[in-house]
Image 1 (cartoon, helix red, strand yellow):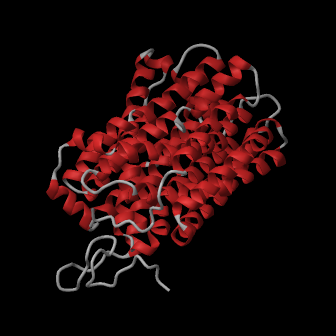
Image 2 (tube, one colour; image 1 turned 45 degrees about the horizontal axis):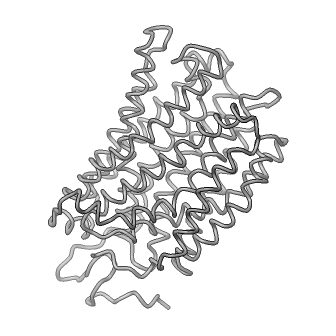
Image 3 (cartoon, helix red, strand yellow; image 1 turned 90 degrees about the vertical axis):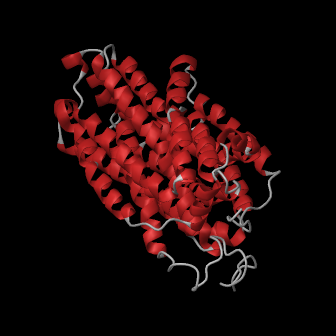
Length: 442
């Protein structure tokens, strides 16, 4: 039986607007919509993954000082990319609202692909001095700017084009793309770690993933050239409301976005980026083994994402997200200890404890966040909210964790800081209404 909020064609409000055979072109296939949301995020998060997994090599190539200082500087550059996302969300989100979702997705993947390729070709600190880290920061800024529109723009696009009773499942393709990118990035890091010696990785091995990522860029650009615009995108482009008054009016969903997204993303980066690098850089760890474990566990996250999207279509996104937030908070303490100080088997068990709830939460969040924003400046407001939240949670998580461990010498210090996001999230989501039944046409 179809959910009650569905209205047959010819009635009012079929999620993506009224679709009739007389007035509208044929609906774009769900498969094409799914791949359109997936491909750009594979590219963008492949880059984010390999940058995180090669921080030791990148730090040595681009910064002076001792090993700890080099790695800390690299994590700072990693975080800078996230702090450029709010600016990208304003500029690229405006393109998505004023010109169309399709134009935004085509531009963002071109920017990201170009900047990623350049990183793979940059000269080192030994070759050009301070110019090397300056260029690295510039490319990360471009990548972060691009991602400020890409990830949220694709979430809006896939959700708007999905039928109302399967928004969560279809929009989870965007989240699945991020995990596929991470899997490919983690697998590439593992393969390079197994195939090359330390000096070879430092000299040129770390560059390989950045250069080959141009293949994802070309595939994504070709796929997106022929996309249909969503009806909501066409409507928003025709309205052209003023930016700043719309952002002020959207303050409530902007705050709610933080509550929905912050804990999950902070936990994700601690689990699948920081923990792996932490074990690679501490004595006694055979880092290719931990990298291989990480790659395998990410497949569990990949499976969990569409599961979370699908279940949220059935039981409600708010209800499921509340339960998953509690589950992540309950498991985080013990899982983090297993990942940072346990054996390889314990490391894998710690990651698996968090893989299911984190993956399911990330899978449903796309549709949930899209549904709480009004149409008039949906891409801009949502992109800004999501980008700021990610910068203040996931983007700084490895940096804050490194700093806390170095300064406080308390192994569990990063967890206490992360749990604050969960408390805020529960307080905000308890006051929200369910989002599944909301029409996206207004």
